[in-house]
Length: 224
Image (cartoon, rainbow, N blue to C red; front, side, top):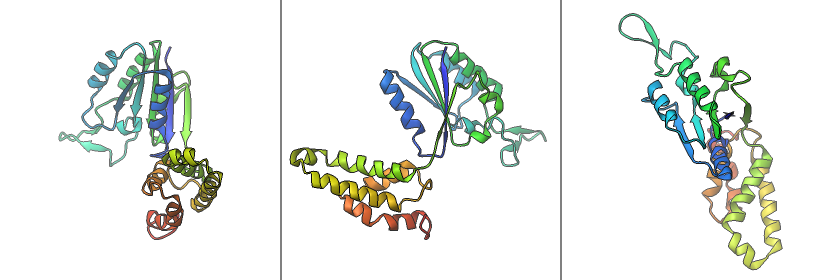
């Protein structure tokens, strides 16, 4: 029987990246489908999943984007006959049938991702259908510190190995702490922080020196 996982949380927190990492660990091919794709239909889903191999990881992204349960004036449209209908081309029952079909096969791992768990129907989340839920939060200071070290130790790994300069590593640790001290708790995604750090390549001291200005820009003139 297939285990079904739901990864949920803000964009850029690592839901998709972890999915690919899991596939790499277990040597599984990854088959990705995004329900945010406007052209995808229920028939497309059925056809795609009917052709899956016995062992694989299925990544069903943006499950909230199908608008299966949320119904408001912005998501309902008039079809020209005076009858209002959903803009989604995938029904809740159709998605559930596909998920249950995947779950009936041994050797498959299904991971669903969503930025808005509150938009999902309880039928999708009920025990017995959803085995594991994992929440992905915005970055804490410790994560910012770890990202700093990971980024610059990786970029400078050859130099560090050649010189074996303990002082340089100590300096890098101090800079990582100074950088993390500027990062507000749970305001930025790990992806945003990593993107900023990569802009500085091999110049960690400048990454620290310019972080406050970057936070001002990210916060539209106010430090986040």
